Length: 208
Image 1: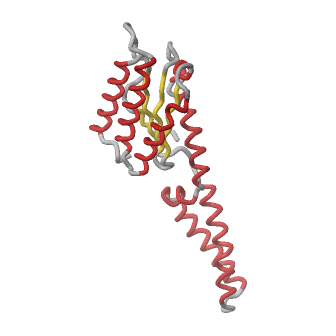
Image 2: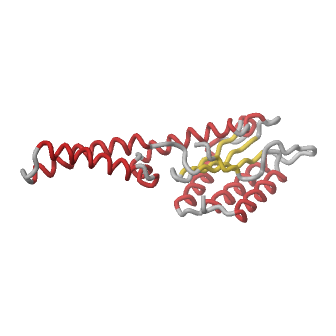
Image 3: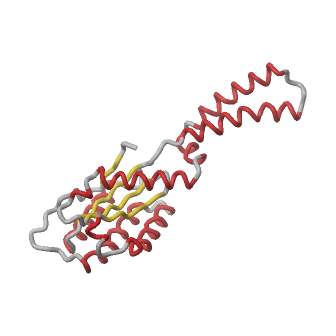
């Protein structure tokens, strides 16, 4: 995650602290490099290509025997499997819709994994990014959902995802946190004695 150096991580932490100071909500930012393993698609492409390429050569010319074609298939499959193990190739081969669904699933899992559902007032909000899938999501707990509909966040989410398209991950976080903070402070003013229950630092999840 080269897009996020220590300075940018500090800026995200400060943005969270500023937003939390203005409302009684908990803000958590999570980032992961990838949300899934898509090697099954790489295997499928390698197997299909190894099956078809030698037959295409045989169709164009009759210079090769059946035994030679079989050797070509084995060699092609091995070479293609090596090539498709590269993450950039694997990600390119996986369907966009599959990657988006997987990232959405990991976002929901992260909400529970990092304890956002356990806050005393149930007013936590998650800012989730999956780099390889170019996926960003904002998830809120039931305490926030009771007053603010999920549709309210859609404009913020759309902008968040647009920033990912330009690889401006840090700016995406900062703008999303600020925008959501402005919405939440209108409904959930900061209260005396509020306890910071969740980490303010950007959580880099490497388990996926």
